[in-house]
Amino acid sequence: MLTPVEIVKELDKYIIGQDEAKRAVAIALRNRYRRQKLPPELRDEVAPRNIIMIGPTGVGKTEIARRLARLAQAPFLKVEASKFTEVGYVGRDVESMIRDLTDISVNMLKAEKTKEVEEKGKILAEERLLDLLLPPGGKSPDGNERERLNATREKLRKKLRSGEIDKRIVEIELKDRMFPTVEIFSTAGIEELGVNFQEVFGKMLPERMKRRKVSVDEARRLLAQEEVQKLVDMDEVVKEAIEKVENSGIVFLDELDKIAGREGGAGPDVSREGVQRDILPIVEGTQVPTRYGMVRTYHVLFIAAGAFHVSKPSDLIPELQGRFPIRVELNSLSAKDFEKILLQPQNALTKQYVALLRTEGIKIEFRKDAVKEIASMAYAVNQQMEDIGARRLHTIMEKLLEEISFKAPDVPEKIVIDGKYVMKKLDKVIKDVDLSRYIL
Image (tube, rainbow, N blue to C red; front, side, top):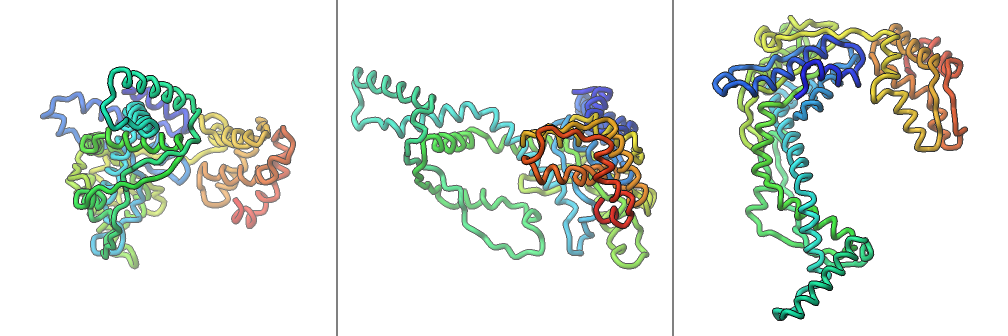
């Protein structure tokens, strides 16, 4: 498990600045590891230190949470608080976030277990395929006959592995995974019902098989998939997935400021405090019914975020405020920050465009003065209009390289983008405020 210093170093590879927020999430993640080391009687008493990130859009709030979850190899869900409504209104139930997080965890664990048994599945599929290509005779073979059959089987195995017979057509028998369609009339979504209909019908109805004529290559792939499915113990996967959600799950609750208004206003405000009250037990710790069983949320880490331009964290109901003890403010990005964002991260925009156009045989080179000009333009547009942070770089880069992307690959093999090129392409748009309002 990484130390907080190492976690921040990893986050620095993708996110520029915002050191305070990085430190807060690094400590929160490390505390989970520390909690696992505690004796059982104390372990359950240690609650996660939930975080509220305050800052304008496009400054790295979501990216910090997403990268953190990837580092921890933990189930991660990003959800907008504004999509939930108070019980009794039309909209999503807040408990659905835990059901979705559990689904993500099950899929993660299933993929891990599948990878572990992949090689064994391929070996079993190969044996099934050899049985199809060389069916055993009716009588029990004697010693010489068995030896001859084994030799023939090994020759066939070599041809199979070398790809010599990949195009040969064989008929295989597979489990029919289709199940009867059921129409459900309900005001709740299907996820609210918490029932795995495929599993239910699988137990009620006899197993059906279907025959297919496919190439040897395709048969190997289909049979390997079926054998892997047999080898994965889904009961164990579900058990581990629930445990992972309960102890390592991370929910990123975006747009918290949109539900921060108190009752007493006009229009939709009537449900905002209700949504907060519905979210409260989930964050405090409760048991949520899912299709896989009950999931406890006592140790799920909640990272909330919002711009909080109009409302403030203090506008949340006191009980919910108390469940988010750590608050960090993320800074607006400067022109210097934009320069670093364009060049330094491993997934920097300039690197992305260079790689994309290289696939067409075009070599793009960004000069330093071009990067500086793009950064200053992004900063200027953010100042003139809505501040959308680093997302402004996407719109400017797309407009800058629009012609090259459109005409590729019928453009020169090497294109140098310098400050003059940037000014030529974007100066008119930047200076015309009305035009940039619609284009950038």
